[in-house]
Length: 74
Image (cartoon, rainbow, N blue to C red; front, side, top):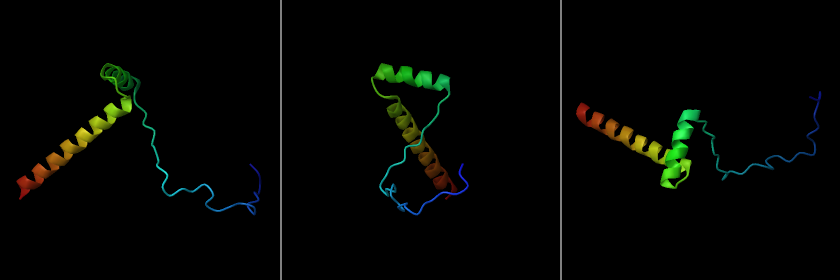
């Protein structure tokens, strides 16, 4: 690494895009990935479709349980 860098010709924000979407990589254990690939192949869909569906269903289940817990406490 250099002792000093010259940024006098630099342009602030040149590569900044406020509307850019960030896609986070998700690393699955090999056994989990194998099951998901097999299931996706059988259903004729992409693995990400199955994973997103499962996550959405889990979120809905959690929200339902939270609502039920709130109703019970009242």
